[in-house]
Length: 241
Image (tube, rainbow, N blue to C red; front, side, top):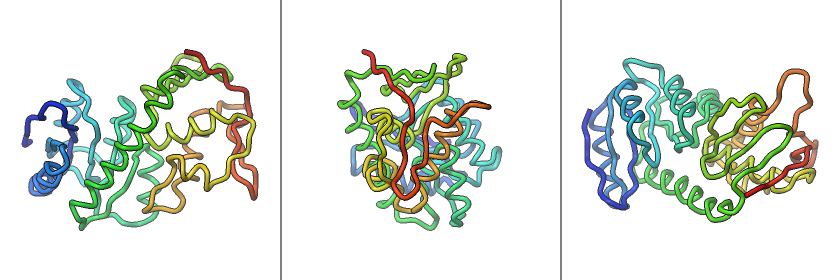
């Protein structure tokens, strides 16, 4: 593991890759944009660090020596809503879809341009920052026994089980929650945070993932597909501060 101390007021990004030169390359590129990269070579190292602090974003390589990268993404997402970018030589659409289904916010294929990775991180962090002011006065959304907290991206089931949404999932869910019982087009939802330029199916993947989280056995789906039009959140929503 190579560590670079984060400077005050700068964003910190955890980089998990078993090739140290990749971590150094990305960390150097981040320095130009007031970000500090902290590099880890194993899943065990980064999970230990996450027990102590939460970075602004994580970059995860899928080919780690001690844990499958997809399993690490799932574990990070279980603990936190921190944005995750996958970095992998696996460029097939199925791998990209799987990464999004597990809660990653973006997917970059090796070989890569460090400037592109930094640009994607900045884009994700900018969307998160833009989202915060709009949700500051809407602390909780309640529907069908569920509770959603925008500031933490935390979703609590009627049974009290909490899970965290990715930045893309959270933005998509909020767009639906703000317009219950109204049909929202795919283009509208794409413009409100569901877009992944590397995968045209990203909006459908995130809708599918949200449905799995929100649909309990024997109950109707709260996110409905309106064929030829888009999607609709099909129940009332109560926002409370």
